[in-house]
Length: 400
Image 1 (spheres, rainbow, N blue to C red):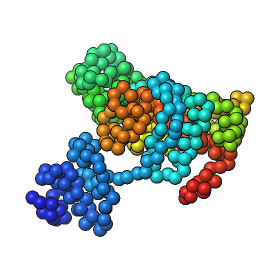
Image 2 (tube, helix red, strand yellow):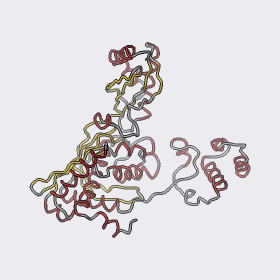
Image 3 (cartoon, one colour):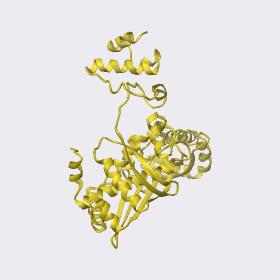
Image 4 (cartoon, rainbow, N blue to C red):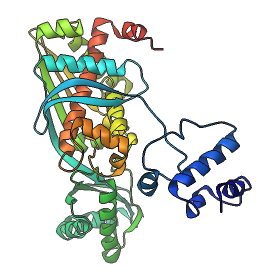
């Protein structure tokens, strides 16, 4: 069957989009689907058609019914000096964004950090979670199921770890009960992969054992206590992905020269905006814009973009120390990977190459780079607000 015949069948409703792959190569299937969409939508898609990635590989791992790719401009900020436990060097950070002034702002923060001797960064926790929901007949039975998880932890750990060469079940905590429903939060270490697939498969094996030995009925493999791709207090408190803290002490003269303001003014803006303002609004994120930096670096390096909502969580602190500025960011929930998933896409791998963290044994180093980048952007924005420069910066850069 040739391309024209396939397109005719699509237009006549005789074939589904996913069925195209049965007749032609992934690259040809991509072109055919795009031509079908052009005809049905009455538009042309020449830019989506222009790409260099391996669509055969992407179709097997990353996408269904592809019609092409999108493109975002990628800028770099740096050099950014990091004094971490894993990253001990200067880096240039790739940032994919369509928000004008963002890269310039992060670059200003990086310049301030590097001039001050670098930012300290530490991964304080490294976990991935999955929390199914289990149905029982009563609260009494729910308590029995909870105790079953506690009593059989060692056996469940062996069952979970039999499914993976890298994952380890660290604990089952908390085990929440709501009426007849039980929500055990399985907590794993996952190595250099982000680990969602790994922990999902391992957790399913635990639930098979549950079905054999108890009357509990598993309703869903994810019961929303994980919590995946949503802002949640449990992730703020217990952590998820990489939990990272980064901080710096910036000398007074550098605050004045680079940020055009004072430590006292930055401290006041941080308290009034990031702490009190966030509390007044009922926000879970006590910061200015972590999501900007997290999303930009995630897009440039093949991370799961939806996890930017988790990376947006965190608390910024700022202190005036006799004119010097102490500044910190705390990110409890940063799911990142240097292998697997979208990191295998060609441009994503290049982004990781720029940072020097492509491949195994690099995930924690990458986490420290993310936190350092967040601090650079956060410092620059809070500094601009303190100096009254935010609107002017956007106007001077011609941004709407």
